Length: 378
Image 1: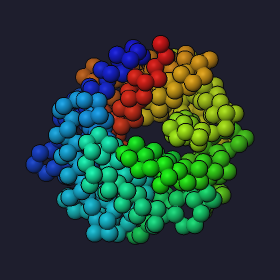
Image 2: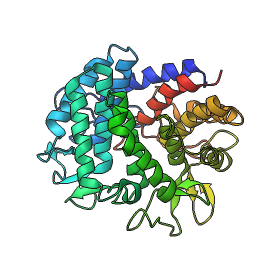
Image 3: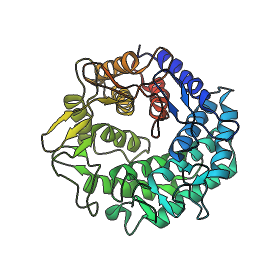
Image 4: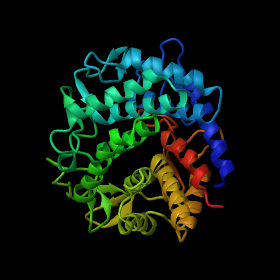
């Protein structure tokens, strides 16, 4: 189930599956898909989902799938005409109106940058490339309070109710996707001279503030700054985020993490999260020093992607970890209709049968397929 043919088939299936969500009347795509594969219509347009679907269909364009161009163009036009706030950043639509237009959500807007950059790379549209760069620079201007090396990136700017920036003001996840945005802007044609300084500043921030050197996990939650990680009982670190850090730094030549750090991140995930059947038990609870909880669609996909890369680079036990996590993904998460369930527990029971929701657009699965085809061991 985990060979390149499965990745290639799943790649196109995801893109075909989400076609059912296109709303030609109101514009954009619906985002809720239930356990039967039925689209639940909504007047909401969550900017994260619209951006991730733009990314997905841009990857389809890059892969030469002709049906993807219409969807990618539609999503780009919908986002730029309906979701842009008067301040220049992007927000969700609730009942046709911009949600919290006076507040910039860093996480959501970084995904708009990521999607626009990939779309520009796929189509050659210079205006998309320029808009991705403009938004990226605006995010930096408003959310980097001092030195990127030490102070990181704030999760929001401006005003809004307490839900408008759900990641919070200090979150390792925001910095992670800032790094991803840099990589995507480079792929879209921005020079390493423009971007390179940022990558190495993020690398220093990661090694000195976000990475726990004792447990070799990437902190997700912080209290009042990136110098104060949250350690209260019940706090966990996502081992899948650690794997994403490993992969994103690997995309920038010369910015790879130290060899011992790379191997420690991989070993942590291998020994604590990968179960005998391939279930990736992602949540590492800091107080208990062990993993618990169900596998999520995105954490399982990120594990497959990272172990595929590690198998190509290092071989060793990562080849088997790739095989097991991929088998679990394809046999437990992928339904007969091609949709992807949201969560599966350690007994193989699907605990969330939703195939689309406000955070889920199968972006992680699609990235897994793109890189799985490249890195799948022979």
